[in-house]
Length: 223
Image 1 (cartoon, rainbow, N blue to C red):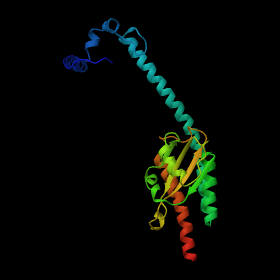
Image 2: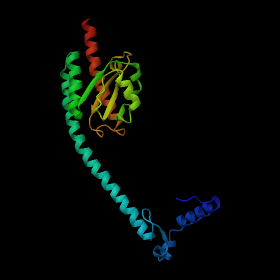
Image 3: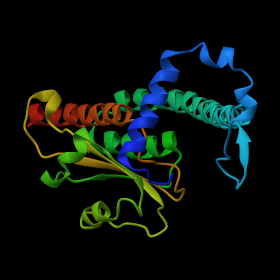
């Protein structure tokens, strides 16, 4: 849009306000719909107001169709993920020692999310921010954070997207501890994206941490 001077902008705003306050104007002057010409949004030609409105509606319909397709796709994926999560939780509940719990967490979540890698990283205070806001997205977008992860574990160069979820260890048993991290990684760049629901990821973190806390409490009693 070309720049206009303040006086013209003020005049145009007055015209726009008047048209909004006078809905019957175009009913009385319906012929103006065909007579007034405006620039086509994508081509170097002028079109009528009616054509412009049709273009807007067509674009909106295309966007709605795209969103509907995405909803159907993710809805199907989420149904499958939910069923897998229930199976994972049952496996987690049956585990009765640290090795079994860690195996259930790692292999179970790798199956749930259908990813190539799942790891539990040792507690580190630097992981604190990822408890409330899990790290999630493509490895390109997360370059700075990947450096921190690389100092704790080996990062496969073939990983294209990942999620690092801070685990609030000790929370369920009232003990202050540095958070650990659950790392999931995929060769698919679109598997984990920045707009994945943080609430959903935090729930997984809470359940994982609670399972680890349970074993820690049992071991402490046994000692």
